[in-house]
Length: 309
Image (cartoon, rainbow, N blue to C red; front, side, top):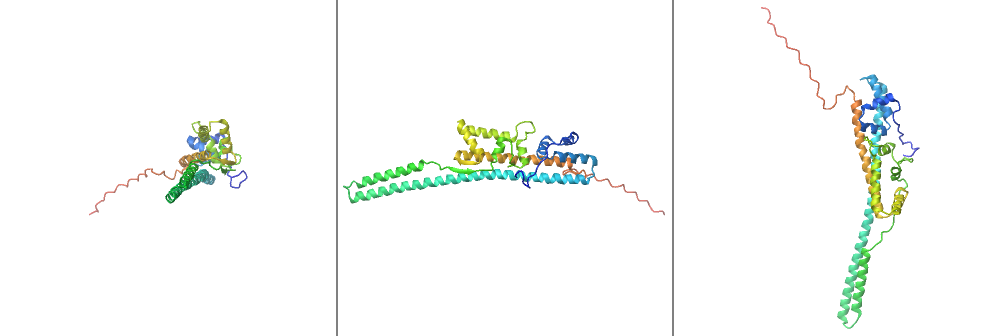
């Protein structure tokens, strides 16, 4: 969604009021990171504060905030699914192009191999027939030699080939924001990009850092020369151009890794959902698995008295 798109969903920053921010301490660290990336801290802090003031009574304001929280969480699940689908679809499209390219080359080699066999067989038969009809002629050996030369040439052509250039355009390049660490064109949903770039709970590397490490490693393995590697980076991060099979395969692997990282956000959202249920569930609704209340024992039966005689 572009900057001015009516479907774009701007997100709030962290809660700036220290008193309200203290309400968020009830959330586990991983759920707190997801809430921060989702821009839910201000809404959630005020909802918890309202709940602390009203107790078990659900005020109209609290109900409105809970509805807004639910709508946003549902939207974030959809955004994660959409971003993962785009990354996976791009990788699949590249793999399909590579498969069609390999199939075309295999068909070419089979056709040349068949032509080589036919040329050799025809030349051999022709030379044999000619030799039987005219044993003194030099034509049969010349024909056999010509057939052998043709068969050899066709066989060599089947084994040696040069891949034609493959043009691939990608004006909306979703690798570039991750490489640069900024997404000014909003190629990603804001929540997804925050989850990719925010540090992990332990203070270690972000998902983006892990992707970049893998990408740099693969580039270094395939292109040891600095100039060739720089050219490969420009092609991968630009608007497209002429790819060879190795670079196109690397691009597919980069999107497969991105898809895996985005799919991992589903677990983060699920942990946030669990935390929200725990802190916001109505005390009037018992948790699943809780033991049912023990019924009160019946009153003791009164002893019957004999009627007066």
